Image (cartoon, rainbow, N blue to C red):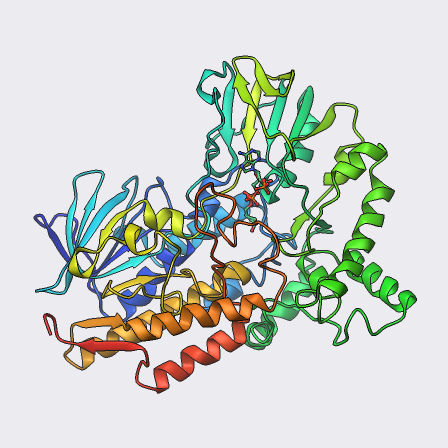
Length: 541
Ligand code: NA7
């Protein structure tokens, strides 16, 4: 199989340059090699795994059931790998990534500890000139951004942060060796999924934990448990059907909604349905009724049930009130967690609501809110990510007519199908803005995009063409279609990283496509329609 030769003189000539060696980059290498393309991936980390390489904070787990959150491109792989728990931990997911890299001999086409810093499209040759922070110069026909949804960490610009005398860790860039909190006073800023997963475990070790919460979120119990061998065997006997079936659901994972409105049943029936969903746990809680994401009135019934659950767990009434979210359930991604609310019943854990005040500053010895300083030895920033577009905008990418992606997207990202921004020929984004990505089992979305791209560029090559690019009309129509669908849901009714509104100054644009099966059908139609919305031709034409 042809592969890129790193000994070649500069610039290295390859068919496809890939940015990132997480789950998307890894499958790209495998799939494109299979089509005879020369590929090379550039990865900032020192090994494979992407999100699961960097997020090593205590308690880090996936929120989709493990046998679903995995590749299906190789039957042998899915038969031989054994998941040990319902929701895999980060170490297990990283072992899986390493296993895949070894099994398919992926590392020979990955350059680690290398960050792509710039890329310019040459209109004459229709090739991308790619540069890295290690001085590499690469010429590639295609540039594929497998940069991940949650890889650019959000470091909040809190005044005085550099003057803190203790250690500061961001959950998304956690040290490779475990952090010992024994005897420490720990401040945690942020109560999204990362903070809520980490806090219970940090609290077990630390002397004291103070949690700084700007927005209370909804956490649904995971009810995590070992994956029974019989369950695993049953799935493996019919893996193909299991995968196909799960992709018929709106987010491409098993999500059986009761096909009734929350408003059409009696109060008793509703309560019972919520109890059962709570007992099952996980993201599926949002599917207890078929209109929780489309009707605010229906959503209110789920909120009320949730609040009662919370009051029953958290003993201190003021803390319980502060932990109550005040927006539609599911508007921000639900958190799937274990023992989070129970942790506030511990004597060494306290909650500081900074909803109205924010944090004034970080001093050398602690965190200052109003007139009060909360002393601490360690700060954990669980402050999330500049999602989806952050890692793309961090690269100096210049397309046709010298247009920079940073300029094109300054008022919000526009991208045809979440796969290709117009004006950037031969450049693809995996799970880019406007695709189901953030609202899906992302491994299914990755495989879908990689397969689409591999088939598309093979077709370009077979026809003797050199360029594929999105048309401006197709992109504009797609962007408004994505927004139209989102407007019919509760997803735009709060501030979330789905909308970019967690990052100061970022344009507020909904970046997900609601409805995986409809999106999949659209991609199929587009291919049948001879790549409708794309222009395919010769370089320079
Ligand atoms: P999230 O979900 O974006 O959570 C970040 C948290 O940090 C959230 O509570 C934020 O409050 C808070 N935050 C961010 N900036 C600040 C400042 N400046 N001051 C105080 N608090 C702040 O990121 P996660 O890493 O937890 O999870 C990301 C996804 O990973 C998650 O949805 C799962 O899909 C897996 P805010 O809500 O913005 O008011």
